[in-house]
Length: 411
Image (cartoon, rainbow, N blue to C red; front, side, top):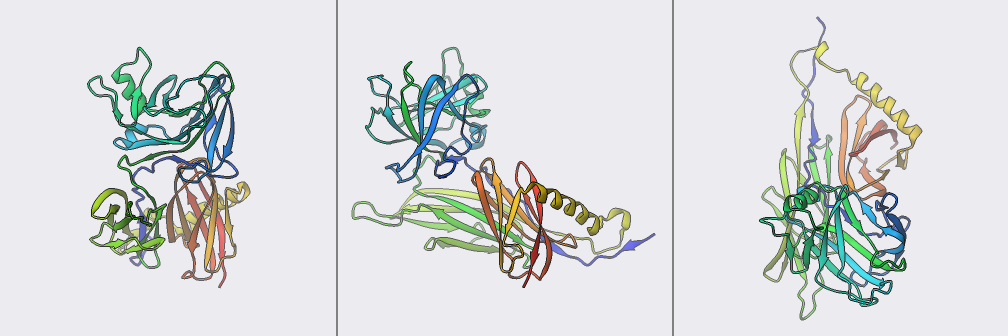
């Protein structure tokens, strides 16, 4: 019997056990402001879409919806199963009324959750009239209990007559997406603006953060890169600015004083990274992400050749995928050949977690990195400074597809 002997080679496996990535539509893409939002299927998709700027609440680009003849609904499936995934958080949206189609009365900003032909609606307490300004609304993501629909100081969830509490919870938990509409009257002349439709903490955090993780087989470590987005660090006499502390989940913590913090993990395990925002001594909120990695080994004892997959066989499959991906041009590598870095560029139809692996010709994963990316054309940068010159395969994996392409590293 032929036997093969292997040295114990350890490498890092990213478990990618991230908390569910909260969907967010900020409509800031200059080339595709609508992102993954689309008109409802015929006959209710009668809406004209454009973009404007700035939203006075944050200075960003926003979405403009014009009512056309018939029903006018705009929908997004990124928010499916919203009740199951984000219970206890809030659905935020910014709203501005430009034209009311002759309605002639104050309007309560509204957003809808849909499931098939059923829907529930959050109706804000605040009212607007044409040109009265932007308002920001937060709707609690919660179930109906004891016949009482969830509500907060911003407004109340409602449901059509004939629906029950169980029906409401079914729509909330198993939703196929969100709906927004400019439709107010029978006159097709209304115009409304929406912006920053996002699932976020209900406690008023003033910043979000992005976590990027990379897993290296060269150093046998995992790195976490944390970037806080839109931090409020500037204080005024009557409004002290916020301070942020990062707990890395391994017994260490860091103050947030630079644009991006980096932390390395040498021991495998599951880590929950939390950012706490404070104003003076008061804790405003805490946000957390969880990720894990583990070390796995190739057996060091005698192993039957029938029980071991040959690296060459694995690489044949990778090469085949690489050729197919090259024809489809699902990913681009810039520059290629690379020296100290390479940007792995791909196009996504929705916000999702993307993993990139760099594989050498023996089939060994030499570098791995994962990021939560928005829809559209995106890129992940890989640091190749420590890699030896040669040919590698870049594998890009998302929820919807896996693509591969050949990369040359030249020193």
